[in-house]
Amino acid sequence: MAKIRMTTPLVEMDGDEMTRIIWQLIKDELINPFVDLKTEYYDLGLPKRDETGDQITKDAANAIKKYGVGVKCATITPNQQRMSEYNLHSMWKSPNGTIRAILDGTVFRAPILIDEIKPVVKNWKKPITIARHAYGDIYKATEYRVPGEGKAELVFTDKEGKETFRETVYDFECPGVLQGSYNKDSSIQSFARACFNYALSTKQSLWFSTKDTISKKYDHTFKDIFAKIFEEEYKAKFEEAGIEYFYTLIDDAVARVIRSEGGFIWACKNYDGDVMSDMVSTAFGSLAMMTSVLVSPDGNYEYEAAHGTVTRHYYRYLENNKDLSVTSTNPMATIYAWTGALNKRGEMDNIPELCDFAKKLEAACIATLKQGKMTKDLVGLWEGSKPTQLDTKAFILAIRENLEKALA
Ligand code: NAP
Ligand code: MG
Image 1 (cartoon, rainbow, N blue to C red):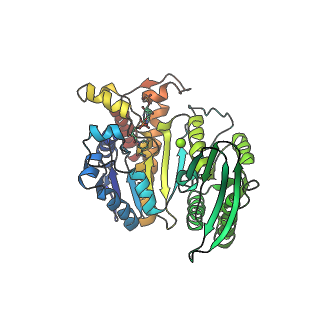
Image 2: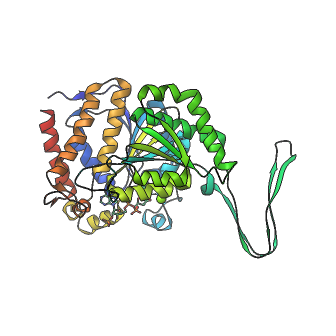
Image 3: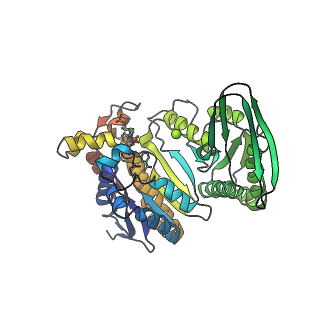
């Protein structure tokens, strides 16, 4: 069988630990035999980031801007313990944070669903995608532990140095806490466009919620910016696609989400998205089945798994003389990162065979699970006929068998 040809490269970002091993297995067994894979390779593994002073992460992000599509393996975000483990020159920032800042993107997380793994919420039939605004609010706030009596004020001084706003926040009669947070119109606009574009590209309706009734300037601005951009740029396109934009108060959204059957995108402010994405992913089953894509307002896409490098499994693998059969790490979300990226590349470059291959690979993954073959994390969640637990490599080989059948 002739391999599927690509015209434009994918930006391939390798990573760390268990997911780095899975990365190679996926390429060797599930992609390279079938696709004449063209990638521009960036090694974002921690040793290479350290060696290049993290320049490689910035280069990778800029390459995504150039080519439009990237696929990323999970990477270590260094902390104190990693400093000594890897003998690092510096505590490099989170690669995801760096890439997000360069692409100015919004993160969308969606679960991979299969009938035999029932969501905790019985009526959820279709995926719920959370779009999290990954900028500002409490994540960039200034905080103060108020020691005792005194006055807290909010002051704004304009560019010319003129004080244009001053209001008392609270006259403290005792110790307390104080916080100043901000966001920017430009970032909220990017967030809105990324959400509207993603809704169109996946043909799902978009919900957005804030606490605008209480926060009449801060949250209300989010609501207004979304409404204006929708009206001016997206309304007609949404009608054409048969999807809708729906704004509601966050309390109401929570109630509606629980009662819904899924199948929509829920856009959330930064903190809401942080909390809700963990709740939704847990309720759907497993972090190992959660996909993630970063979409920039100018239409660049970066695909990855939502989980990390699965350090605990990696250490066990190392302790057992690099024996892969001692771990049963789930490669599903990482495979879906590849299929997401290949499918998008196929769409952008008009290569239907590539899109078709991506769909068949996803179908082969689902077919393998339906045969009862799965990794350890899913065995406990499985409600189908008796599951067989496989190690990562055996699971990937079982997927390959189904993929070969589908392509024959
Ligand atoms: P993690 O790698 O997501 O793993 C946490 C636990 O979740 C694992 O120990 C495992 O549970 C389970 N798990 C996650 N993915 C799994 C999979 N594919 N198959 C089976 N089980 C899976 O999170 P972490 O241990 O907190 O972080 C490890 C490293 O990843 C850190 O250095 C962190 O900086 C990095 N990280 C990177 C990203 C990213 O690049 N996007 C995201 C998050 C974290 P059991 O051990 O109980 O089996
Ligand atoms: Mg969280």
